[in-house]
Length: 89
Image 1 (spheres, rainbow, N blue to C red):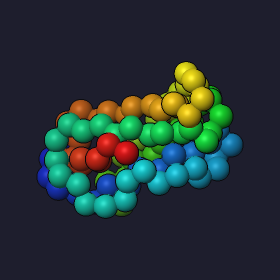
Image 2: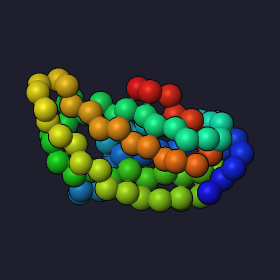
Image 3: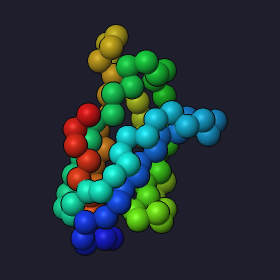
Image 4: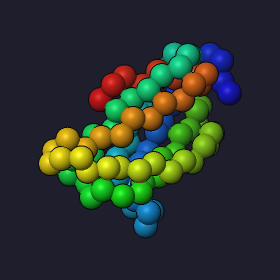
C-alpha cells in the first residue's frame, strides 16, 4: 500500500490479453477511490485490469462486465486505502 501521492496507471485487458483501454495514467492523491468503467462498446464477460503505482505492478484483478441494457454497461472498481484518486469516468 502506498500512503502518499503517486503516479497511477490502470489498464484494462481482454481474456486474450488484448489491451482495451487505459483508464488512469497520471498523478493521484492518497485515499480510498473508485472509478466507473463504461464498456458499452464491449461484449459482456470477463476482463482484467492491471494497476501500477510509480511504475511498479501492484495488482492484476478480474472484473465482470455485465450487459444490463444496451449502452448502459459499466462496472465500478474500488481500491480502499490505496494511494490514488481516479476521477469518475
